[in-house]
Image (cartoon, rainbow, N blue to C red; front, side, top):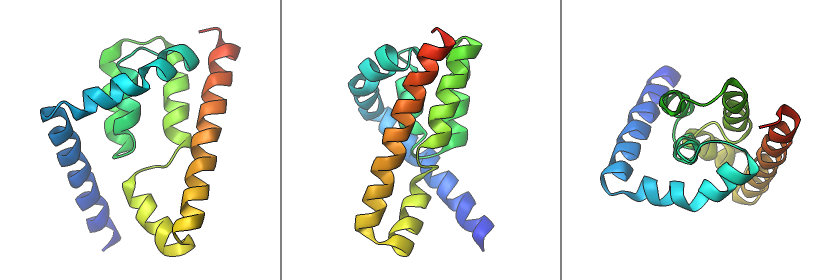
Length: 128
């Protein structure tokens, strides 16, 4: 049962990402976050799209990093950021069910803040 849900969520994530691409919304969001991704994390502009897509599915996001031809150091930063913040949309539904909306929002803030701090620190420590 759990495996079926994971496959369903993966399929829905792929479907949503493709629809967002068709309507150029993913590019809009990528452009919106690119200053942080480029200036703070030291990644390529295209990585912002992968990081946003990581919200819908981590496996998709890591695959989207490969065509960007980033350095090994940049890939370390990008995958660390992807690992720290919420795994996917399915996690939100579980956290809402287990913690309630208020604590889910707190958890989200903590994870995003942590990813922001750790990603920025890695950029400076790795000399990107």
